[in-house]
Image (cartoon, rainbow over all chains, first blue to last red; front, side):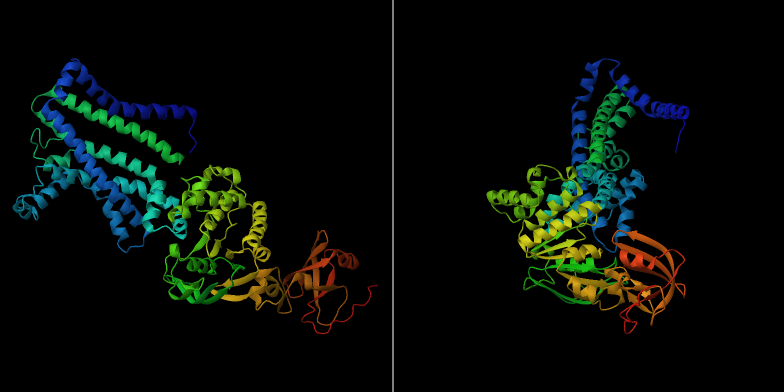
Length: 268
Length: 323
């Protein structure tokens, strides 16, 4: 499409204005409000035991969920692209379920499974395993919401590189496993890294599903997003801003990683 | 030696290979030649173990290989689009098979250097495939395949993605290389000129079956059927037969078994002259004659001539001197 110069400028102004109103001003405001009473109060607020625990729980849940989804995502992408398994279409559709279903529904589903009257709940409680209102529940919810990213990033890369290199490796004596580690994985590394970064961003920001299953016990099962919500509802607005600022900082870091990676991804 | 016995392979409803049997002698360079969809690549991939036959047996180097995976067949395979390992250097690409086999480091270095010299990539060991030309990439792929000292070398349209100039150079080079190292080689191509130039033996495939096999000369001079004849060179259709354009005889007066034709375009191609003719029935025929013959006939568009195929027109009458 050919766009006239004047219209190009108008488009640019419109796009930037949209971003400014909806994104940059609100996020900027969070930082402004956070630091308007000085940095000392902020540091105090984000270093309370509850805040530190929420920070590490968020990181822990994200790390486990993203690791699981990276392994699962690569395996699923391989099944989707490299095999002719009969159920492929269904699997392909199911992968996107977490995009389509509201996180709240996912949270409720986890309660239905692992709650006191759920399918697995009573049996697990009898065997001393606690899923709901503890870390495993939070991890499960996070896994679910961040599941599609790695598959969706890796599958097109696999399709694009084709299976010539893998076949060449097999004619040169490599087993399937050797071909995967030495040929396939290096070839998909930037796509995989990009998918991981997207998953991290999604996992850290998750609120809806986690709020259902966490139990919100301060210092134990509070993630950063839940901490923000709880402080706000408890009229600790300054504390909510401080915790938000931490979330926003993590988000900006991931954004930076994404920009760098997407450049490498298109270059390779 | 490679033996393929009664191999059949289908993809869905499409029968790629229909009861094909083939023997490839040790040290030979055999070309599998055919149009696209003839099954030639499928046959090569079955020999390699990259496809499994629905029925039949494959023997590679005296060993039954039908159910062996590609990695255990001792083959070298070269792909049309090079299949270069993009994230590795040229050296690492060539070393790959030996490193998989855990050969000692000195041996790997020595052999890779030697092979890179052999394929003319001596100074380029540290480059990435993306920094090589197409011809260089394919020579790297060949060195990589040869590094594991395969019993047979299988080439799937190896020059198919290259420019015509590079292509001609590379096939002459491949022929010299084969004369030097004598590894049993099977080459798949749809280009008859390439097959005739490079190979000792041709196997012509069509619609999943072998039409004929033999030396390039046998096939060219005694094609088993119209398909082989048509595939190996230009043909003209005269008197219900296929005939090579250079076998046709033109004269400016009626002769026994000759058909009347009108001259269309006359193309001077150096030593040879190509004459486009329209027969009485309307069919278009091309004849290829020498410049001397053309000068003698004084051909120009619109002239009427008589064309005959000496092989089918019965006794050849001595042409009377033209007035």
